Length: 291
Image 1: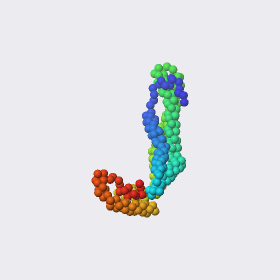
Image 2: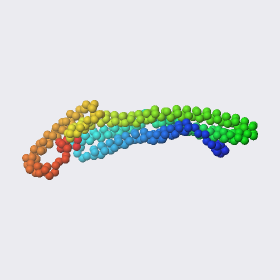
Image 3: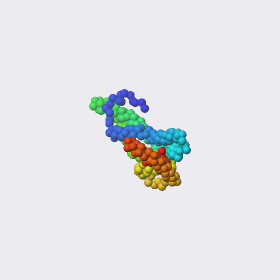
């Protein structure tokens, strides 16, 4: 809205601390909205990048030449899990009602704050008129000559003062009510953020179940604790028995091979280990199901 004639802007400004207070508070809220909105949008994008990274890495690891090797099944399983998770993540990202609701809520909340800013500008126009007649009447009363003019401006001052006080009180009430909404809205933003985390972690945990026996046996073979909160309820599946059979077979093959080598070159072997201590984990040495 256009401002009034410059004559109204030259009067001393009437200040209302409540309006300034709530306007400052709403500005702080708006800064948080402007910062948090793109972060919520980016959350699904970050999970998309994780899914893509897992898939690309797993696919590349499957570019091997000896697909008859027993360890190849681990690579295939990892690739399948990665592809399934990527597909699941894409579907969730396209149909995430919580994020869609929260982003809409933030947009409407920002629009509400901006509408109050426009009302502040309208109030400023009325404030300028009120200050103009206040100063003008003060000057006329000091001169005390033109009674008719004084009475006419007294009525104008009264009307402008009533309009100013009315819009100020209404605006203060609206701004306070608007500001108090931010806690509940920001709480929904937090839920939105963690809903994505919970869903993605849950889906990744569910889809990766076929890989857990391989990981568990690997960690056990190299003496690393693989316990975690998510693993506490895991009961395993048929793959566990299969991997144990692979381990036993590999250990037997290694034992036979070592006996043959010890018969002909025990002295050379001792010298080799004395000069170059092996850093290969026992699980790898035993040709476990994880290469």
